[in-house]
Length: 183
Image 1: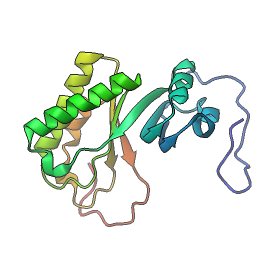
Image 2: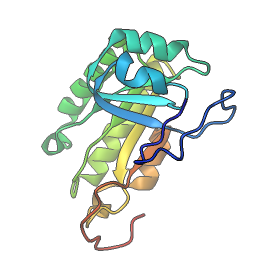
Image 3: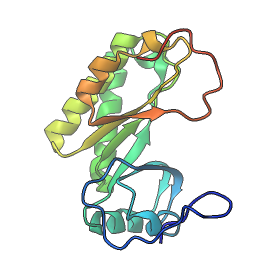
């Protein structure tokens, strides 16, 4: 039973059969548990865990048909983007985390990058290469603002998209003025 978040629930409906073709539906959570997300696994395609990830949830997600992908949410310190050694160490650590947790990849959330555009692109490209050399099925996604308030110069959207499976447009809480149209 799918429940609507509106007050009177008039958009709720029953699901009679699983969807064949699905759009990406990413569930972001800081405490990812079976009790929180288990009932919604029929519509979720990816769980992005930015905190605690319950091992039973990974098992349950992977048992779905089709399997729900589970990724860890990651951030990289922007001042270190120009440090190739720091990037290499961080990339290796993230790939090791993905492998040790038995999950499906990484969701990047690096906000407010107004400088270091090329170094950010290098980080994402290096991460993609490391993930693919370990297992080419690993997923890589990136949360990018759709109204970046003068941040467009900090992100090479085209180059980033070449290294990712998909981007997640951040269209929530956008209450500032963009200096230019989003890419």
